[in-house]
Amino acid sequence: MDNNAINHLNTLLKGEQMAVESYEKFIRASEEGKIKSGLREIQHDHREHAAKLAERIQSIGGIPEYGTGITGVISQLRLTLETKNKNDSVEILKKAYDGEDKGIAMAEKIVKSELDEESKKLLDKVLSADHDHLKSMLSLLTEYGYQYHVQ
Image (cartoon, rainbow, N blue to C red; front, side, top):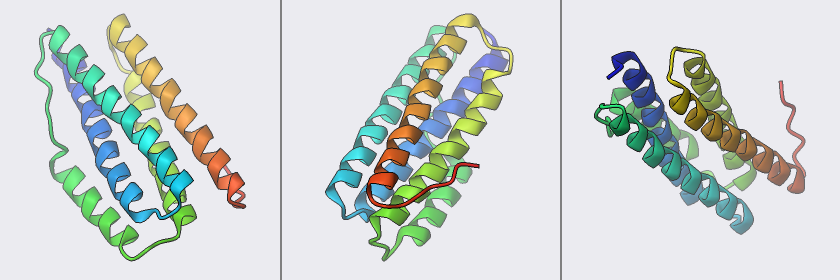
């Protein structure tokens, strides 16, 4: 059992769980059906990613850590305040895009750490899907007339 790899994978699991919770808030705050539907699809992917990460952690002898901890609680409180009484679906989608982008950056740092090949393959698939999420959100933003400038 590689405790370092397990810790990294549990960090990613926590990030996926935070994403699922965040998308729940985005879905509830959005009033535009097509945006809401797109956010649901992304949330579904994050649920699947969390399940696969938990399976991987168990397969290498670890125990998946469920829950988002104090970081997740603070993040969700902030997100609740930011989305409360907002019904601009494009603004909600922009917030989701920014959160997804930050999650990818965090995950990419972990991928560079020492992980076994099987874990790296899993993370490559997760990151590929996450990049696809950004593309789909950009497409929706463009469709609704917003020109998002990627930095």
